[in-house]
Length: 284
Image (tube, rainbow, N blue to C red):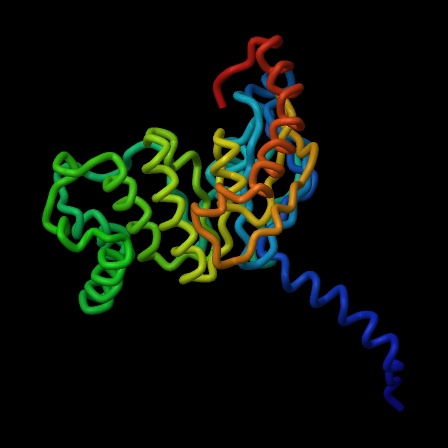
């Protein structure tokens, strides 16, 4: 006769399963050392769970391993130790389907128009022409580039070129979007407006987003949680919950509670930044 699990046992087992289903990506005991055992210990060990559909930002002093964290999560760089999981599958050696990456550097192709830049990944992946056209047209409209669809990158402002790079990632329909200082080269006002567009993109797609940034106001405005990293080797010294509503935009910077969040981030970071400067750290 088949044993039947008591109702209370089944309910108890269901809770961890439900919690696990909410985890979109995770890092367990992840470290990264460059140059072997006697090299530079850049990162970890650290653990992190990204909830499905959350917006998570990472801040930390220069050289603490923020970009290294993004690289290992994306599969661009293998961890020295530990495991990275995305949707329950191990990430190692290549960027998995479902993850899109946007870097600070202008990655647009100068010889291609805006439309062809955005379509590049789809065509390379063999997506049929009709579907490519549909996705590209949507992304061009969504990112406010309709009047510039036939322009070349040299004819665009820095903010518009970054929109092109984001749109090129968007059309691949990633479920996890990783952004490494995407607005770092832009002025403050443009960064705030680009932040509004990024929040709109996040809400529209339902994707999980991880943002690397040096700007505390950007991290505070955009995120559900902010991971604060220590000086190298980088580990999380705190995870700050912002408490913002999902339907937020740059007007939140005028709220008194916004100042409270940024002040907390700086209080956590100040000592770590002094350590980094004192150690003469730089680079990634």
